Amino acid sequence: MIFNRLANISRSFTTSAIRRGHSNGGVPGENLPFDTNNTAKFTIVTAIYLSTGMAIPFLIVRHQLLKSNS
Image (cartoon, rainbow, N blue to C red; front, top):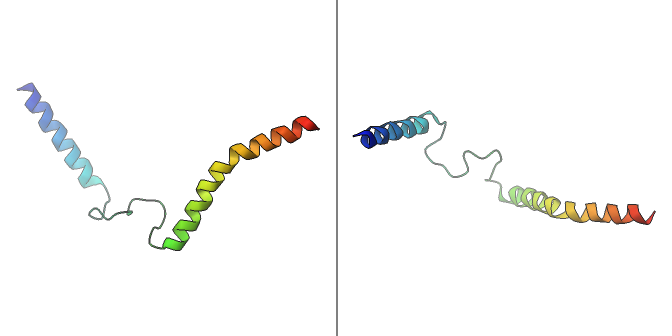
C-alpha cells in the first residue's frame, strides 16, 4: 500500500520533470552548451581542450624544475 503510493509519487514527479524540461524531443546534442554540427570546429576545439588539460601538469613540473635550478 505505502510502496504503491510512493511509486506513484515518484513516477508523477519524474514525468513532470521531463515535461518541464526544454527539450526538443530527444535530439542528440541539443542540451550541450556547444555546437556539434560543425565537425571540423568541434574536433579542433576538443583537441585543444584535451591537450591543454594534459599539458598543464608537465608545464607545472617544468616550471618547478627551472625555479629550483635558479
